[in-house]
Amino acid sequence: MSSQVHPGASGHDAPDLVSEILFSAPATRRAISRYGFAGAALAVAFSLRYLVHDELLYRLPFVFFVPATLIAAWYGGLGPSVATMTGGLLLGDYFFLEPHDAWGPLSPAARMAIGGYTLSCLVGIGVIQVLHATNRRLERRIQDLRRLRDDRLR
Image 1 (cartoon, one colour):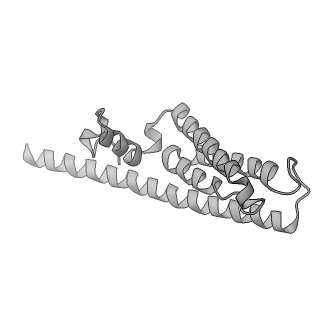
Image 2 (cartoon, rainbow, N blue to C red):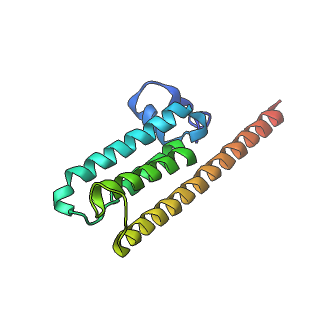
Image 3 (cartoon, rainbow, N blue to C red):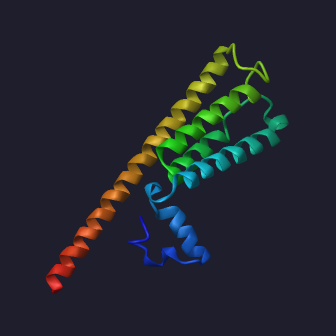
């Protein structure tokens, strides 16, 4: 929901900033902010995955890229989430799938990992897009009801 629904969300207090991040629609943010956030999420996901490289070896190559994609979808919308998903796919394939430090040829297990990652991301992105659309409809409905109330009070 936007700052129109949460009037205090545009202040400089930490709770207001968190509220603004969580409840404002991606369309209200500038593209540089949305794509920058997606890039940062991808960088954090890659760093975390690289740090646990020895523990996970080459299993679960995309484990940190799925949440990064979903966070990018929530904050940035469709474009940044697809960019994060694609970046995660390329980084995961190059660094964490066999053969290492190269793209392809892919084993059946690697193809399965890529398919599972892609499907998980696409489903998550779709669900978040539905949530954003529902929020937009609710905001419009709230605005319509407020206008109706104001008209009746006049």
